[in-house]
Image (cartoon, rainbow over all chains, first blue to last red; front, side, top):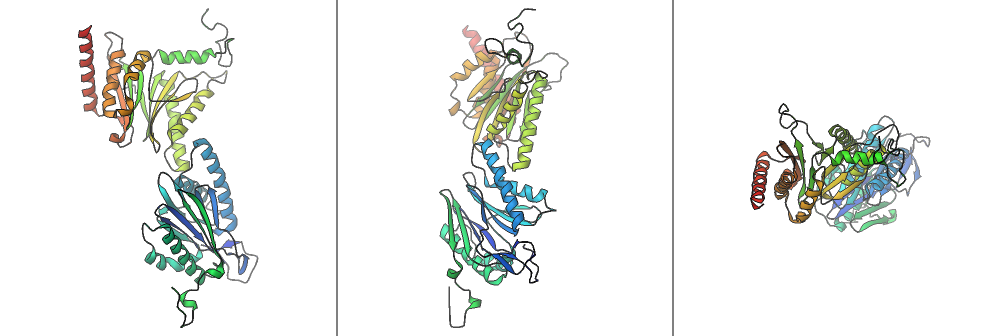
Length: 225
Length: 249
């Protein structure tokens, strides 16, 4: 969870009060994130990219301290490259997530990082692993994290279902993020998504202006699905 | 004393004029003179079988193990100097354990054997160390399927459908070549392995016992000793086959 002081200050640590979510579907995974990076009340970057590649088939969503998560991702990219050189084969998602967990757990005193690792490998298909603050690694069919995730637990529980198609999963991710970004002050900007499957990786971008408003933001006479 | 490699065989850091490292070759001889060990890779797993000469009536049956568990999905049979083989098997155990600790999944066969090969090779590089006098037959069943490897004293690691090392290796390899391993199940291969070991054993009168292990779908992809009843049945078949061929002679 992002740590933002509520003072009007620009000297706090750069944190990603964030909404991030990853969802498995039939044939792969979709990762989605907002794009707001804040330092206190100052928005340091309103179009940031919180979806970082660890290797060709595994990506990570970053929340918490931007510096810490960037450092972890950098180390793990290196370890994965080494591992793939020795193994001569694409890394499995579980192994990549284990490396991230190892970094988070061994350095728990110094780090403030909540990551979600998701990807696709030929042995187990699409997988999502959530790695929380202390270094707990939890596999799940979908996971969300960041300060904005607290507002969408109810929504996700109600609307997620097993065996969604890629399009359904994409729509689910965008809707969930839309609500999180509406209610959480530390989340906002645009919605970025990355879809990973057997056929590769696809990046998509939904600018803030194209994110439909939610019910709570509309006047009585306007209805949006 | 004059011998094959006089003068060039005193240390592993000396080449002979014809490009050999005699210390490595002598280590290989230690393996060639040991009792026979063979491995068979079948369609659903791998079988390892080792012949053990019973050197004394005072020895407890089943002691002096030559086949070791490295991890659940890996087993190793040792040929050559048994204590040397134990050291290499321990190293394999270390590698498998540390791989699992770091990467969170069982070590793949080709990674383990490359690391073992590098480790064994190191002992061929330095004046102060002697090469290991042991060949390891490694049976693996990982996410890429079953595989059989052999790591020899020079440090080279090769992948086989079937192979044998030790005294009876030539005869055993001839027999193995006749088998259609790709169509055989491990259950059938156990019987074949025992048959071959009995056939190539030429120490008349000396008692020997067999250590046979497998890793296959039937064993839940875990490396373990072959069930006692299956082994007993295989021994019975092997002895019957030998008697038949004796009668033909």
